[in-house]
Structures are given as C-alpha cells and as structure tokens.
Length: 338
Image (cartoon, rainbow, N blue to C red):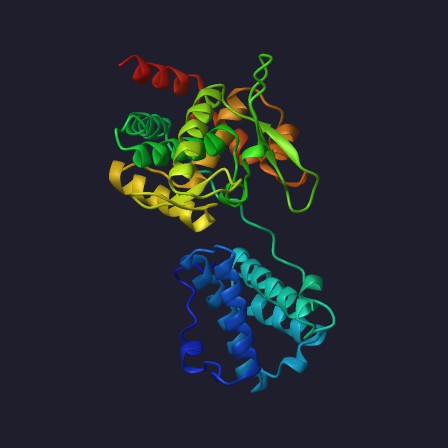
C-alpha cells in the first residue's frame, strides 16, 4: 500500500503507547484481518497506513484519544495527506485503510458514524496489466495434469484440487476470495446438454451470478470428486467446501483461505520458475475473454466489477496477449493417452 520511495521513518520514533485505547483497538483490528485470511504482506500494509494516521495524531494533536475521532479531524487528515503525498495511489490507499478501520470502530459502537466515508479519495491509477504469459499458463497446466497421475492418492487429489483452482481462475476469472468460500453445490456441470459448466459466485454486494468454465472442467471435476469422497471417508471427515487443506497423509479440513491459495501459487512459481500469481492468471483470463469476443459489460459482470470500472487498458493491450482455453483440453487428453 506504500510506494518504496515513501517512508514513514518518524513514525518509528512516535509509536503508540501499548496501553492506549487506540493501540489496543488497532491490534484487535489486525487480529480480525488475520482471521479473514489476509496475507502477512496485506497486514503489514494496513499497519503502515494506520501508522501514518497515528503519526499525524501524535505530531499534530499530541493525542490519540479515540473520542476526538470526528468529521473535522478526518477532514484535516485528508488535507494532511494531500500535502504529504504526491502519489494519488498512496493517498487513496491510506484513506481506504482508515475507512475500513473506522467501519470496525463503528461496529464496536465506539463511533456513531464513519466520517472517512465523506472524505474524497484520489482517483485510482490503473497499472498496465501483467498477465501470466501463455507459455507459462501451458507449462503450469501441463505440470498439474502430469502431477495428478501420481500413485500417491493424496498427492493425486491435491494436484486435482489445484487443477480445479487453476480452471476457476484462468477459466472463470475468480479471485482467491471467491474461491475460498466455494461449495461443491456451487458447481453446475450441465451434463444433459452442450452448455458450458458454470460456477456460482456469491458477490458480497450484489445478487449471486454464474460464470462459464472451460469444457475440460467437467471431467476434471468428476475425477476430483471421486477421489475427494474416497479420501474424505478415509480421513473420517465431512464438509461441503469445494477446496480443502491436507497434509501428506490425510485431509485436515474443508475450505482453503485466500492466503493458503496464494502459498500454493508461490510453491509452483518457485518450482517451475514461471510468472504466476492468482492475480496474473486472472488477468490472463480477461485477455482470453477479449479474444473470445465477450462483451465488456459481460466481462465486468463475471469479474464482479462495477459498471463504471474501465477495462480500457486490457482492450488496448489485447493484441499483445493471445490466449485460448482449447489447448487445455488438448494437453489433458494427451496425458490421458499416455
């Protein structure tokens, strides 16, 4: 959340007293974020942003009394950010972090309203998309398919789980937060017709909607469910989550946190030495849809984006990034033959 050339060195010298109310509230806030599956890097960024607010309170008011948190104070903090940071993104992210923290204070009944919501945010700078190169997409998929033929049942199941994760991101553009809460019942295969399999997404701010998946998903999902049910019985565990945690010997629990998914990608990225993150794979999905001539409005709907979100940079860079999903089925079938 902070540019590398923007540091808050003075805040290290002006830290909150551990017994202060604000310090304790911020620690509770960080704990809640951690239970939500936020990564260590994300938690660090939240702390950096709130440290900026703390530094402002101490240097400008010599006080961190929570009862003084009103619209006037927040408005003055907004002016402080305007002067301190030249980067729109830096100002915007500090305002966003403080808004989420004040939502937390509002839920606890410590403030009567969230004054940060009235604070104008700087416009978001849209960075140039950096999708996973198509050669790396194929390398990753080939490795997953080959790995899923392991004689070790747990290893085979983990690989099939990771195939499911891959297809839900590259095929349907899901975020790790979408994947984390998926249930088995959220998958529809449409076996009785030629329609594409689909996944149901429960968006926090709109009605649920479905997104199509690559056709190869059908057979991958059926194979996955067969072994999953067998291993659930062996591990004496039941759950309705689509994904799961496991050690080398048994399934531990249903569900998989966003951070858990990120770690899976980190492991494969290091092992295969490829450009691969959930975000870069999701960006590859957007370019795939563009080359499939999907409408902009439909892509925004599937991505869970607001109608006002601008996909201009993706459309402009589409000629440089060519993707298709037919190759996934070819690779999958070639491995089955061998």
